[in-house]
Image 1 (cartoon, rainbow, N blue to C red):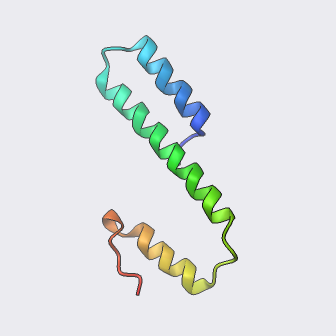
Image 2 (image 1 turned 60 degrees about the vertical axis):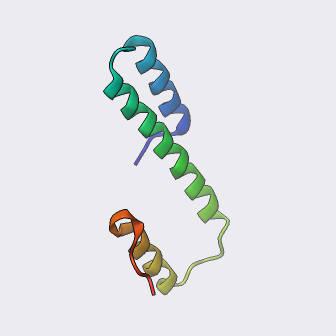
Amino acid sequence: MAGTTTHERARLANTIRHHPGDHEAIAAARAALKAAGLEARIKRDVASWPPLSAEDRADLAILLLSPAGDGDAT
């Protein structure tokens, strides 16, 4: 899992500041920041949902674990 958005934002800034020519490291830090933001949004959204049934959880697991998220949960 990704770190917090604050941590990943600081890591990106540090990478840009201290390794401005390391484009791979900067791209990786940007990807980690994007993943942390997505994780935070998902956690916030899921926390607002009503409790899920076992079938609902299984359907979501199929969706999330499918390559490219293209699983057929029906």
